Image (cartoon, rainbow, N blue to C red; front, side):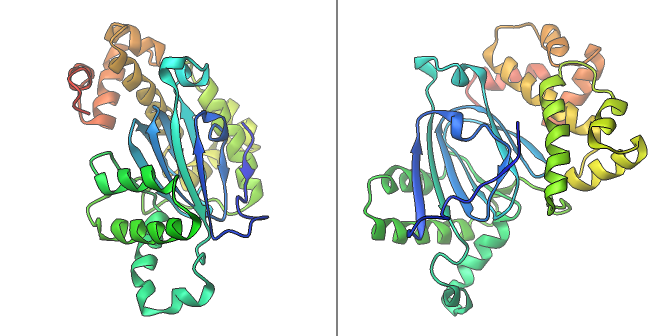
Length: 290
């Protein structure tokens, strides 16, 4: 997984770029870009890594992601391997902060826009209960360019008014600014992502980062807002949530499949992260209440 700095509008004469994806390949890469990204996973499930947040996404979830915020979509395996009954449907809009012109942001009318932009730094999350956003993504794919522009302005105004909407990234998160940080963090995150089911050794991860163990602990906490143990456990719990929702494995089997060494530790960590016990989470998921 190589970090990439993308620029979606570099060679375009468009103010906004609207894309409709039916496969997750364009999203399974750790990346960042100068454009804002407004995305709806109309159909699809997996784990969303953004800033210092690990978030389990599902059908109908929408995210408004700020400029230069690193993020990565890890779709569930059944989507990656292309089973027909688990196809994905992804609608994505990219636009620069000054897509209405540099002077526009100085106007009184742009106050709402600036409010929305400020919240995007921490990534604004809206679930499928926001029917305005669901309708917006359904319609914008078919609209002519000028109408797309007007629709986007309307959606930004809507998001600015959702004062109680969830922000995924913590206020303390320190966004990576240098390419050396991205390269270093990419190696570390790839190692954790591929090996979280086994024991993650601090010595190994520090070596990958080119740091002493003490320096790495300080560095990782500064960049992610979490200790290595906290970050790894949240990824394990995210995987556990998927397995609990499938209802194919016993809870104790899930505990060891996710990389925990004993059930007591798994149960305690699961409740810390989700505020529910594993059995409570499974019952809610099976009842369609998530």
